[in-house]
Image (cartoon, rainbow, N blue to C red; front, side):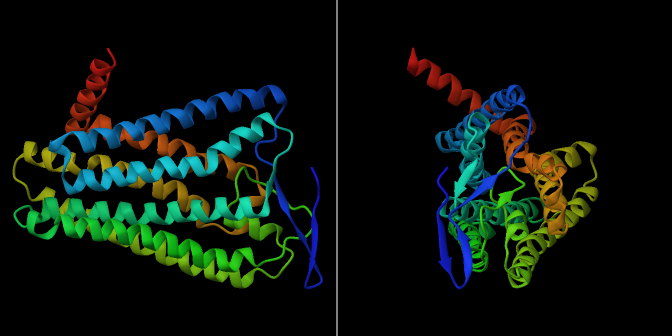
Length: 318
């Protein structure tokens, strides 16, 4: 490794960071590499199949599946921002990442996390309208509205990440900071800054409050209304049928929100502990792997479309 030091404003600025990652023996590093590689490839395959199934099956050309295709597309990039660098570090003794590389990884990671928060709340609103106002659903949730909501969702993620980066990237990181994490995240970076990071922390807290709390309120309000509506259905079969249309999304919401809130709702000093990296694996690796499986197991239409897509591709191959 070649250390490049730049002098600016009487601060020694580093040209790269060192990601400590998972500090284990070489043999276990190979085991982790194999496990995470298989998980990464399987996640990409699952989400790609869902996207293909939705676009190829006319029965899935509905708002619910339009948003699901965006979720799958998002999660393919979400894991790609983190996994390749993490996998390379398992095999290499050089765990450094350049300053620009770290900031780029952080920018896209924050973009995708913020986008997913908002997208999941939009999907909850879609289920609310479908169950609580079924007769007006085609009038309210139009193709134009879906496109606008999806575009707004991605735009909010990009803008939020940009604002956060303005405050984080201008901090000084002295020497060669060792980040106790396996990717560049906000709190680990703030921990190794040799500047007063209180302003950046305040901006991060405020934006996190908006991006997390507002969508969470939408989700809670939507599902409270859905639950009240379902309980009013006289037949048990009708209640089961109504609940089945939103069960998959509810499970995905619980998984994503619970794991991310556990991490980001705590003080930044918690990143000094190795246990936090294990929790981070849940929402950066495990949740994106489980989401497509949840939608497949709980949704008959998706299962049928996937079956057609897989067997159709096999037929073409033969």
